[in-house]
Image (cartoon, rainbow, N blue to C red; front, side, top):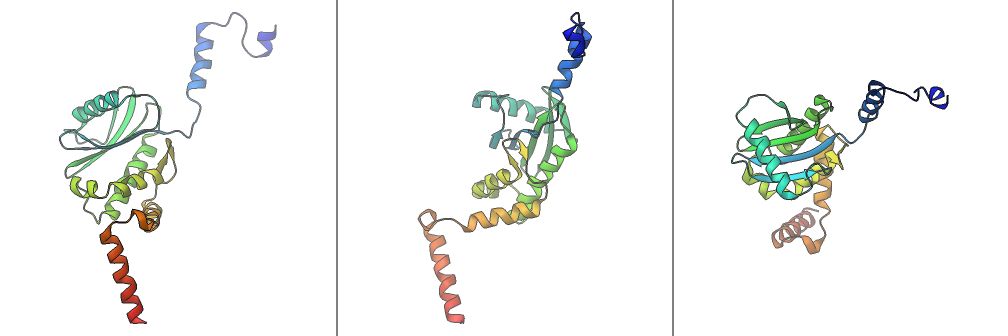
Length: 197
């Protein structure tokens, strides 16, 4: 009788148990993004951030990335369901941008993350989103990704605030971490402003 009060009889069949388990699996969650990675046109990793333990080792991650790249780099579509995951992607010149979510994830949310990442990088790199420029500005790229997604939770989908926050963080580099060229440039600007007063 206790089981009946809870809504499930003692002899609950597999269908009732399965329905209850599916309800638990499909509960809404903020942890939307499983991974973000950028691959060059040879299928080699430029950068990758994984937000869960689906692929715990670097070897498994690289194998997954290679498999995704092999199945997507020749297609014109932007969304795929591969290995039980939703994959949204975009290519530009010599780079492929990927955002990965679970198979139950809303593709529009993943596309919003992808577009925010690409548009932010495009603005930050002055529309020169290619491998060489990306590698030269890797710190800013990681900052942008961290502003968009944190531990799999989408924080931002508008590129403007992302670009502004990355610019603010880049200006706050301590003197000890600046290159000689940056220090000289800063000194030149200060001298110029003092002469113009």
